[in-house]
Length: 83
Image 1 (tube, rainbow, N blue to C red):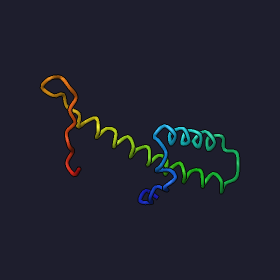
Image 2 (tube, rainbow, N blue to C red; image 1 turned 180 degrees about the vertical axis):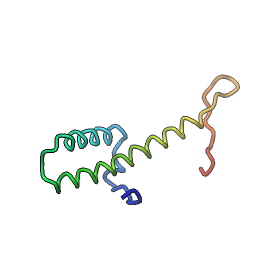
Image 3 (spheres, helix red, strand yellow; image 1 turned 45 degrees about the vertical axis):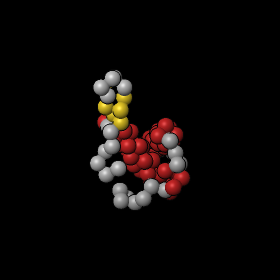
Image 4 (cartoon, rainbow, N blue to C red; image 1 turned 135 degrees about the vertical axis):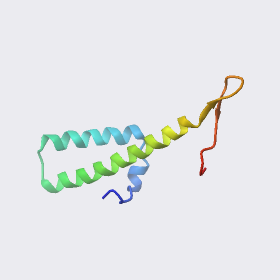
């Protein structure tokens, strides 16, 4: 599952929207009500949402890490390797 691509509709979600949906799925699964097939589908979607959130956080961290302070105190971005 970890090598499976994130569905396009999930990739379009903001970090906040994906996290909200993931939290809802976790709450539903913790309650344990519902059908097994529905729980499996929710778990799979939750896995994709988690991966999407992790990728969004990694990208944000990289953006923050490349910000430097210039000689006159202004924020200056620096290109990361591979960009």
